[in-house]
Image 1 (cartoon, rainbow, N blue to C red):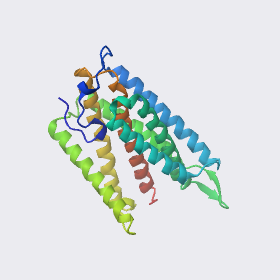
Image 2: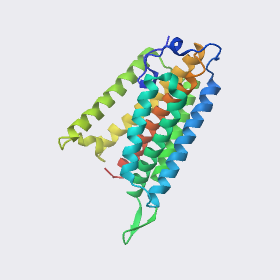
Image 3: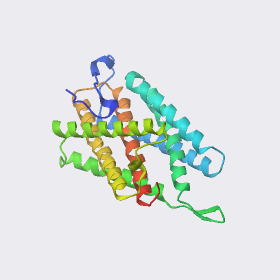
Image 4: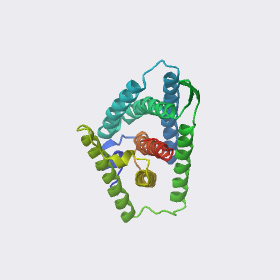
Length: 257
């Protein structure tokens, strides 16, 4: 039986509802291949968007908002219609590519070395965030594979509770923002703000352990092959969140609010 996950993509899955006669079963290799494909779509989309922004042929704000909204819509569609994942998951990846490319370009541009108002060099903060994201992913995978971190019920409950608390904190910050206020420590480059950001990055990283656990459980329970797309989508949701939080942490460490 699958336990409850803090990742909305992996909550309350009933494999029997999505089974197709003679379809086959989900495999680890199938999930890996589809995850790599979704990741490639995100990277290609982000690279194209990145170049468009720096070439001045696209609006950062427009791409960020558009990608964010489309990503949210396709994510909801995937969660509520899991059998559509083979279509909606790639569309989600395209939308995230737009959003992450624009966001990364915006952050990078704020760190550019300028002379007479013209950008002359790039800080490399985005590449550092990308490298750290993949490094953390690999570390979490090794810790899970070697059972150094065991996804016990208490561990899963703790990570789920912490993730829920973070979601509520971000929601409160958005609501307060409409009234011209907000949780200032979330954007502070002071010690407390950095500690909070580091805790959030840690929780996002630990969510990968839960994702690995649910993927393994799905394979062991003989989930239908079509669920490979869905589990790959869920893994991308966590990976995107982890990248954004690492990028924000690096920005705070550099003294940029």
